[in-house]
Image 1 (cartoon, rainbow, N blue to C red):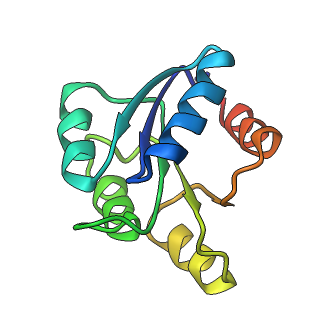
Image 2: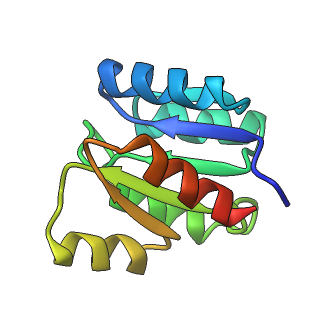
Length: 121
């Protein structure tokens, strides 16, 4: 199934703006959440084809939110790509263990991210 609708979960307005512009130019429909609670509320309204997840956020962090979403039968089929400034190998391994499909280190390189997204569809 091709990816069309993407949910970005990130507390950085700058990062959200960058990703929204990038993905919008490529024809994706983008929704945004600035924290875990907003993300869960949006998921209940509409299931996206992909979630781009930051790790460091106030409240529920991205690892915990990834685990919550990936283990919920309503959303377990939705792939999650973690986009984080945490670039240690242990962070990547932990993110994948929580249920993420892939891991991209910030600053996100446009072509790398787009290639990973296209690889899902």
